[in-house]
Length: 303
Length: 330
Image (cartoon, rainbow over all chains, first blue to last red; front, side, top):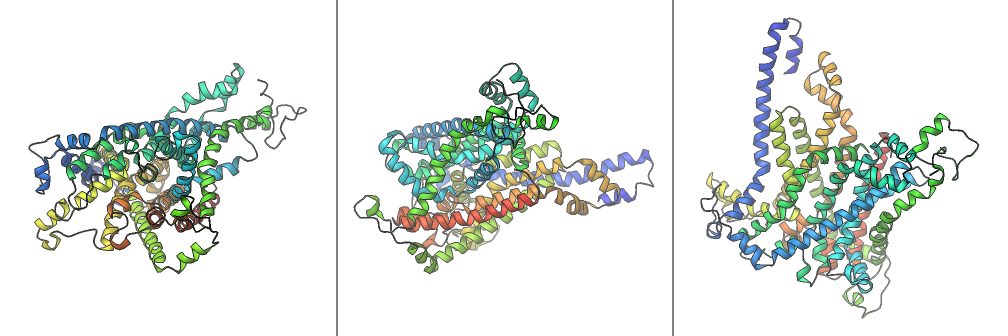
């Protein structure tokens, strides 16, 4: 396509050139746009279907209503989800765990990122490699030792033992830190040295500089990395399943959702309503920080 | 603070008092400032204590437990621990099921990686030629798929492919393919894997799309313009200019996808109900979990965990090698 443009350039005068090129570009763009719109609709479809099915009345769902709309939207399914299984409590549990993990892991990772980017010391490269490697550890494989570790820890500190929300907080802080350090590194390194010098000349201590100047400056990066900790914690299914064994009141959303799966007759309306409740907070969080997320990722990738 | 005395990076702590602030020393000032020798460790300590307690120690314990015959009786402390050395591994390697599961894992993960990369990077290229509002739309819906929790994503896809009530079968029957009446997508081993893989690709291609798109945007337009003026065709530009410049990003994205897809647990567990009919859809992670927590064979489960970790560590080492060769400084 463009090859034609190029070869015909010498023959054209400036006057005829512009509109012709524009038209051609417009046509090509239209094809790409149309394809992209179709793809976007396909990608969005499962989410659309989830919301739609959650709003359809139970009778329609059980009859296998495949219409892409509903004339009688009802909140029955949401009612069933929130009423029957204490979903509100599970929602709250999920929120608490995710928020605590985000705050703790971000603070710890930020401090470590400061050490690894703004100081040079002998072990620096080795530590960075350790962090990179620990990011690759399949945490799922650690379920067994962590199960025993938390069981023993629970005897000393009940708050972080099995069946407690603290156990989930603890493991997710551990798992979020390596990637968070890796991501924050780029942001912390991007703050010019002159800022640090100025702060020092003005008499700020190192910690004061880190807390009052550096932290606000890298806030966008902090947001981007908090999204990852939030999502991996919010989505966690394996650890919630393994560690919260008998304390129903400390269950989180993913497990609560699974209770609606029944061998013979799944209550799809309730499952979809529960899925909507579980997806919406993440969706809002994700889409609202997408710009920062992209720049954050670029930073993490560039290293 | 007297930390303004600059010191060369290699200089021992305490600084080199005789040295004036030469330009070379000034440049490295950010990295080591005399008495700040201990400071980085203070900042590092909290994170590393957590990492050692929750990653380092468990890895050690994982290896440890894998060398014992560790069952329910040992967990509750009723029976003495029995050190069996590598017996758990021998048992696994002699078990044809282990090799099937390993094969499943490799095939499934590879398929997920290939399709994720294909879909993600083609859409990234497409995204560069779109009107801004179309591009935004594509990105927002992709982020939506990305953000969807594995559990809910699995539930929705399962519902779409439900044998009797699912939209997909209903549509297929409606257009005349009656053999899909009540067809179960999870009954056959490979159609079940295909279904899970579709869900996985759906929620993981956005990462590739976003990253590769950012990479393409970072290529200076002058370079592409120059090639165009020299008469290079679009495919030629993509192959000879964009691809080499995108190489570091493509490598990172590929390795990340490999690591994520080898570790998949939730999707398989939920969509195939814990590993499929007669365990036909087991992958290493789910298999290890079932051995440990369903069959109470903690030793065997740990051995599987060790194998899994070793596998991913090999991939990571290759990754580090490549990073080093492309000259990316840590």
